[in-house]
Amino acid sequence: MRDIAKEANMALGAVYHYFPSKASIVLAYYWSTQAAHVAAFEEGAAQAGDLRSQLTLLIRSRLDVVGKDRKFLPALAQLAIDPANPLSVFSNQSSELRRQSIALCAQALRQAGLSDELVELFAPVVWAGLLGFLLLYVFDRSPKQRLTFQILEETIDVAIPFFYASAMPELAPLRERIGDLFQRVGLVAFLQSKET
Image (cartoon, rainbow, N blue to C red; front, side, top):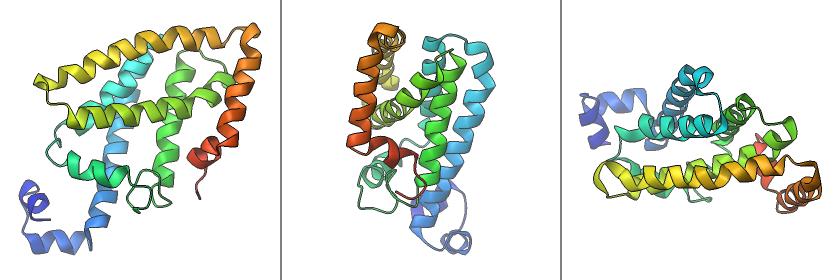
């Protein structure tokens, strides 16, 4: 709390006036970064065009949003990945944030021209990938986090042919199997529900 007060140039007591607990500060931070991510993505999405550009913009804009807060991110990352913690990205308290983030992933896929079927199938997968890159970025000690951005480019290179190949009629059985697998483990219902 003292670090947050110092960063905000406020007295510690003033911080508690606006935020009754650490949890309320973290949730406010989640909402703030989500809003900033949506704004940054939507600003460039119309010009982004193809799938590679959309995915790159989606993930890089998120990393840019949180970049100024890197010194706080390791502590937040521990909260974010603990499913038992109410501040986790998997908790009931963050379900609306999770839904909005997945919706933004769906928007990126849709604007790149993917069918509704593929958008529904892959938006949660893209969201999970976004979380993975956030974690990599947090703990990346390479200069200016170059490793994260290199791996991002290489991952997109690998993913794009898979996305497009998945649209082939011959692969409809594979799409069904993937969707069925997600349903069986409860992934889609969990990620998209407001009450998980």
